[in-house]
Image (cartoon, rainbow, N blue to C red; front, side, top):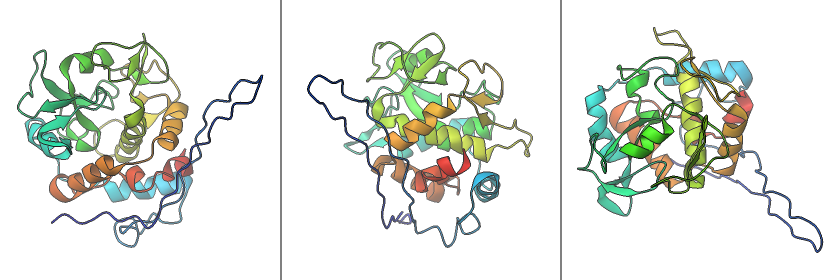
Length: 267
């Protein structure tokens, strides 16, 4: 049986909007992610506990870099396990659209789901090569057409709806995922920025505040990703996924799912 990911406590609060007569209600704001404690702090994360800033980022890079690497074809089978719909074991849950779709409909045709690189593979030009191009921590199932609509856009707030959007939005230069996975997206992007630091023949991936990164090894918008991390804390689906990747496939973890407060501690 896979190890159980234990949290002693986690407190995440969203400030509520107050409506007063004659006044406009203030926008919801996120409370920064509260400190967490996990069963891995005394073992896997032992050398990172208590650190902040570049020291924490460097320690986490050292911790999560050793991993079993999958081939791109092996990703198909892995996603059918890591992203299984908790309400239907025959289906996977698509990331941006939220649709539950048959595991057997993986492919490249309309109505199929394919392998979405959340850190767009052109941002650093790593393609689908074994390594960042096959890292399960940022690969998710998505509808073929929705995947195409997202393309290699940076992440930001705003835009218009589209077919099978599930609440996601897009405009000419950015993509906003549906509310339920905003934090998931942020933590996947920031995992990639810590895992790939340019010391293993791949580009040094880093977040920034731009939405016009093109083929540069950067992904934005950092300020929005930090907000999403606070607003949408890790849920059971995301935690189960992290655990399965650790125990069944790659042997490494996304530290920002275990410790979302480390986002603010580093950036």
